[in-house]
Image 1 (cartoon, rainbow, N blue to C red):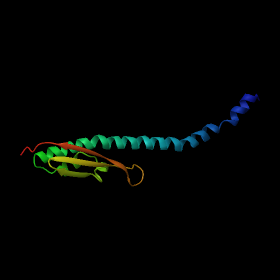
Image 2 (image 1 turned 90 degrees about the vertical axis):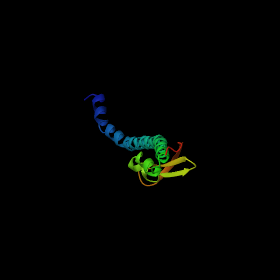
Image 3 (image 1 turned 180 degrees about the vertical axis):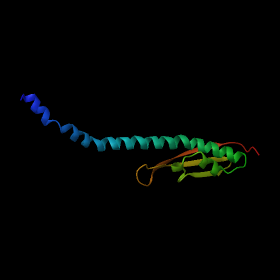
Image 4 (image 1 turned 90 degrees about the horizontal axis):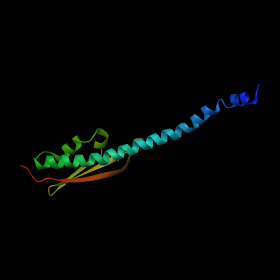
Length: 116
């Protein structure tokens, strides 16, 4: 048997071993990318929630309910809505995708004149 054929047989399992060794790295990178997307979504939607809360306050509706209505379930947890002098401040907490806790929060402000 030629030397190259015996070497190929010796390398048969190395691809599997390399794949199994790299799998945790791929999973960690995928989770990190997903976490970045969740943080970006929280940042983006906090502005929309603040605008919805300001609109609701301007027409005499509940700004807290309006802000929560603009956020998906996981981002509704820990949301804070404050109103002061016609300005609405919405704080959206960035949840951790694995485990419990948060990675921080984003705050957005909006203001509309009273329309009632």
